[in-house]
Amino acid sequence: MKILHIENGRNFYGGPQQVLYLCSGLDQKGIKNIVICHPESFLKNQLEKIGIKVIGLACKSDFDLIFALNLYKIIRREKPDIIHCHSRKGADFLSGFIAKSMSVSNVLSRRVDSYEPNIISKIRCSLFKKIIAISKKIYDETSEVGIDKNKLTLIKSAVDLNQLSKQEKKSVFLKKFNLQDDDFVIATIGQLIPRKGHEQLIEIFSELKRSHSRIQLLVFGQGKLEAHLRKISAKNNLSKSIKFCGFLYDLDNYFSHFDLVAHCATREGLGVSLLKAAAVGVPIVAFRTGGIAEVVDHRETGLLAELGDKESLQKNIEYFIENKKFRLACSINAKEWIKNQFSIEEMIDKHTKLYENLV
Image (cartoon, rainbow, N blue to C red; front, side, top):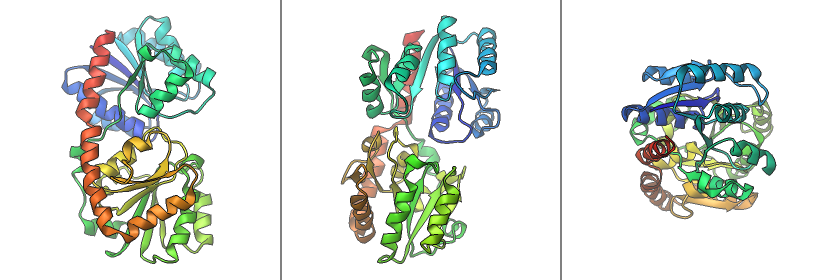
């Protein structure tokens, strides 16, 4: 069986990481994989390292005819049994249309909650034989659009626990981020874009700093709001307490040294960074939105606030700062929760069965 995957993301965010996990697992099962991805992506390099065939090809929009023509040629040449699209930004529409016109079985992974009018979403989904939702929340929302439930399947994203076990020493972590051993380290991970809620988090942090002098905020990610967020931090005299760390390819090596992960996103499909944090025992504070409630077991592995309730989110962060016993209990529970609910082996097995049924 040969699968042609399409992942158009340039940066190594959650989606591309899942493609890497999946292709590596499928390869070990003897299933052949070819991946079309952005020619300058980190994913391309990582796939090549493990011997997966990669074709560098970027898609700019729903009307990228150059991408469409090249994709058509690749399908004719490679003759895949299944085409699996993991991306949006045009790649889903074009690959779905071309695969359907060529009578090739195709699959779409839907990784984000609602991002477009229902009619547009329904048209995109109609081009695929199967739609994979990576969280129960996305499954429900896709069903509400009017997609036949027989076409939908739930396969949750997962994390590689073996990879996450390779954590750097605490001394290395402190030196790298210029921290002190008695600092309470809060991390937030995600693109610096409006829906991730960084501005709210900085406002909350500013309030908390008045009564908790040892807290530090590490902001991981990049995006168009970075200059704006830095300006807000400086205006509130927080430049020494809020560190903008950019996008780190080796971030997985430092997760266990965070005391807390705070996530203010207003929309989130599931949140791979949250899965990773919980997998190494870091409690999470977040809004109850998208698939986050599937990652965070409220009061057991973290604390959730209702969407937009900034005051409750602030109180939740403060509760973790002041209650070490509760923090440690959540840490233990989080590790077990992720191990049981987000197994990478189960994720790969479910994809394999889906492919086999389509073939």
